[in-house]
Image: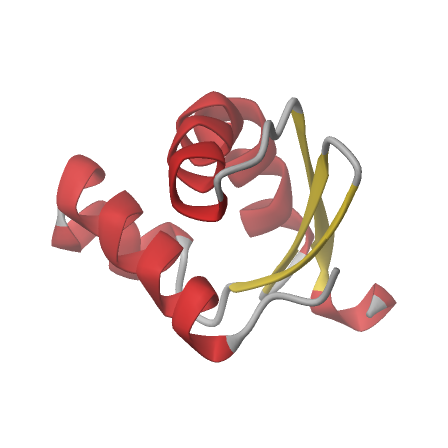
Length: 85
């Protein structure tokens, strides 16, 4: 299921509210919460280092926020760099 822009921005806003603006701007600049496939949420980051940091440090936070906003269980967040999009 493709996420709407509203859903994408809502997840971004909630993540930013939790982690703070400076960390969000550094790590999540250009991020796009793209789609779900069952319990998976696909996220596109600006580059490989941002993708790795998001997946390592923030995937459980994102899964929790996305589960509440989308009203479906998100168990795993898959973060890919935009070059692989």
